[in-house]
Amino acid sequence: MPVVNHAGHECEVLILAPVLALGAWAIVGADLAWLFACGLVFGTVWLSPDLDHHVGSASARRWWLLRCIWAPYAMMIPHRSVLSHGPVIGTAGRLLWLAIAFSPAIVALMLGGIVIARDVWGWYAAHEYEAWAVLAGLEASAMVHATADWMIP
Image (cartoon, rainbow, N blue to C red; front, side, top):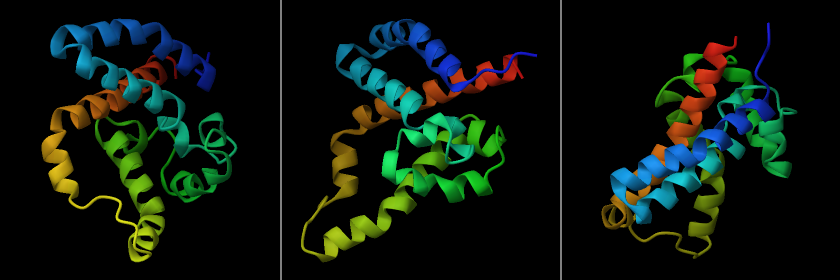
């Protein structure tokens, strides 16, 4: 049986990206559609559901020296499980993992006197639609990936 590899997943998203972006443009307009497209590309290239694979996978290699942050994630999350490939929970889990992985750096910068964000909730309130557009793009990328995995086991 054929198995979808990472290059196959990227091709699927590239083929569907114009359709998805046009759909987003028709629904929410150009201002948010490009953010949706950015989320779609970032989700495909750097935040793939296949980060639950070993650190040598194509998804993890793109993180270069930072790929070590995905090693514990790959050891804890079974490949193609609902925790990595499931709707919403997979993307949310990877975003949470990133927040946990980078939290020591964020805390160190804040303790060092560099203020990253004075009011995260204030930023979110001012940019709620933009944040949702990027998140929708990330999730769309993950769902195209998971659908391909489901269709071609």
